[in-house]
Amino acid sequence: MAVVTGLIMLENILQSLAAGLLIGAIYGLMCVGLALIFGVMRVINFAQGDFMMLGMYAAYYAFALFGVQALFGSTIGPYVAALLAAPLLFAVGYGVHWALVSRVTGTRTAGLDGDGHYAQLILTLGTALILQNGAMIVFGSYPVSVQTPLSVSAWEVGPLWDDYVSVFVNKARGIAALVSVATILLLARLIASSRLGKALRASADNPEAATYMGIDVQRSHRVAFALGTAITAVAGALLATNYPFHPYVGLEYVIVMYAGVVMGGMGSILGAFWGGMTIGVVQQMSTLILPTQLQNTAIFVIFLLIVFLRPQGFFGRVVERT
Amino acid sequence: MLRIAQLSAGYSGVPVLHDVSIEVEEGRFVAIVGPNGAGKTTLFKTISGTVAPMAGAITFGGVDLLAVPAHRRPHLGIAHVPEGRQVFPSLTVMENLEMGAYTEAGRIAWAETLERILEWFPVLGERRGQPAGTLSGGEQQMVAIGRGLASAPKLLMLDEPSMGLAPAIADFIFERLIEIRRQSRLTILLVEQRVAEALESADHSYVLEAGRVVLEGDNQELRADDRVRQAYLGM
Ligand SMILES: Nc1ncnc2c1ncn2[C@@H]1O[C@H](COP(=O)(O)OP(=O)(O)O)[C@@H](O)[C@H]1O
Ligand SMILES: [Mg+2]
Image (cartoon, rainbow over all chains, first blue to last red; front, top):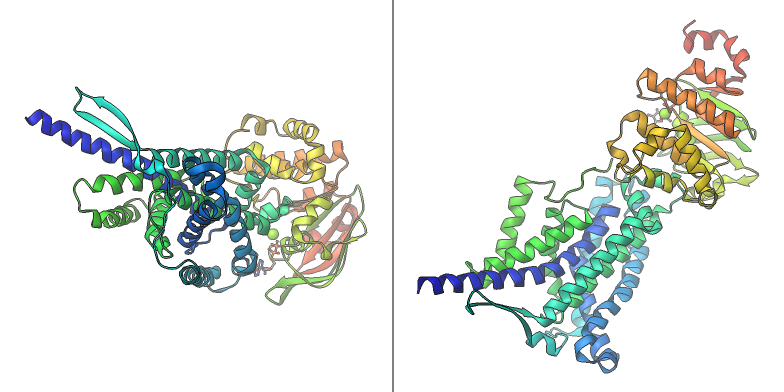
């Protein structure tokens, strides 16, 4: 009897771990978007959660109204819609940077109070509020989600240990996690070895020296902002196949993103991914011992512990920028 | 090639440079010397466009440089090796050099220039995969100079390349500059605190004090000047 109880506990732990890894992969992608913006521009974007919300609605409407479902079906359609959110939100990020953010960042901020950080704070918070309220007016408050038959079916891993232990992997979440990891690998490759990626890193390392190389640092910032927006939007759109969302959903995830990015060492792309992953796992594992309502409290406690004990993050860069 | 006329520039409306006129002919090696705070770095930044001028004109190869945004100026053939090296710390040595070759001229000449850079500074080849931030000061200076050369420039501007380096390393850097110049016939504009060496290697030098050109001439003319002998050469 004790053995069976033990195995059931083991099964619960493995099940939570699997759920944590799957959701963590998406949190990771979300965090990567924010880290890209912070890493290149040193701007804290409080509207990141709301860009994610826009990504969710973009995928939702692309899927339901603009023919993606009709064209690709309900199985593949949601993922096509999620990827379609990328160029759309890239354009949104590009426009927001051009119209607003560029006015309080970069070389313009030299000499401003707090290097322009106050202006950035107010501007991105204001953008967040406008996006939330605007979405409320346009999309309404009723929660929606991208419907796929995959979200109610699962792969079974096992049975392991004499038929007692089986882990179920939700198909929709499994595929979302795979798409997420693939997106990150693609981005990591772009940043590591393309001319654009190197110019972004050079602009982040030393904007003045980058200018002396002939790099348009303002343009680097715009591309990083747009790319970061697009990446987080894809994460949101992947999440939208599993979780109903509404115009204020960004608030729920902004804490996840910040915790992940701080854990990852502020600005390190792969660090942010592992940070997001860690949060996913902590969140899901915490449900084993804590009531579900306390999930986000668990994340916050971890966040505070990290800020107190290891402010440089767990996966921080080896070389700091000058 | 580079013509600076009656230039005034500074920060937040306070001028640092007053009525500075300097000319660099193609193929020449021109040095600017002067005490700390004279405005040498400010002059370089105004040429590169990271400091805005208040009055005056700068032309480069006949082009009105002040009408060109800062990030386009390197594409015209101006390489600025900034004071304090300013390498990209998280990029590898090779990536730093590649960033130098961000200009079209640099990209076209890349294979050839890289070979020459590694000949002049073999240690950069050994360190090619290492983040530049982990190098010693002397090695970082080599990266900074190599990065400047990688753009295949028409004019190489160097701001105190020996600053903060041990004397032996500074000697080496200086000796390399003279060798690079001998082999490439590159036009060079150098700011240096090692006044004796600078005057000796340059075809023509300017003395900048408190934001004004107080003296100019070739090595012999400047060495004959009592103030230069006293203030800079310790004679
Ligand atoms: N970013 C800046 N803001 C305000 N003043 C500056 C700045 N940089 C330099 N200065 C001032 O300009 C003057 C000239 O400095 P600089 O051009 O660095 O001289 P040098 O390179 O000859 O030592 C100095 O008085 C310095 O304090
Ligand atoms: Mg200086």
